[in-house]
Length: 286
Image (cartoon, rainbow, N blue to C red; front, top):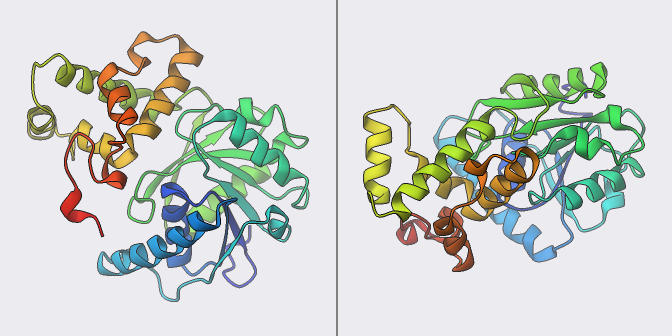
């Protein structure tokens, strides 16, 4: 990565919530983006979501000058000329590893590969790559185009050149990179996700409503939005996946997803993106 908006080409893998949000950030700072997904319908939805988010970013003063060009594709080989690849698919190690492994066979050696993950150790993904030194991790928060700090993960085998390229890109995007070591959940998820799970258990036990939990955590303890509204923003399905990763890799029983979370995922109450989670967002749906 050069930080040059003319020559740099950022490829994003995955047209879900995080893929669209990161694309919005990159485009809003003037860089071109190639968004790749195997599902053409998901790409169409992502393009619409990005357009809406770019308008929101403009209203919030979170965009630069010119907007980069968005291209979409269902063909992985179209990433061949990328100067950086950011993988933002679902939080499953097998799927992420397969996507990253495919990219090492497409892009030039030395091209930085970035896994955007909330919980999966980067060394675990790097172990299946021919060039593990090219892989680093990021954990963008949602919405990526509004939150100015990014957790950046350096695995033991990550090359210095890779880290320099990733932190350089983030700086060019107006983000503050905070580099941390490699471990399940890194810093933010290792602390936040068990706390959200504990908040959900309080509701499950009937001790308090979701509204009461969030009000107390926000107004007494300074949590900006409350843990359960944060869960709805993350997506309860994503949260359950992340907790499962943490539980499997740490053995911490506090990371075993509680039944209330599992039930909400089963019924499709996934948070903001589905219109309902711990709270109702139907009126805010387009």
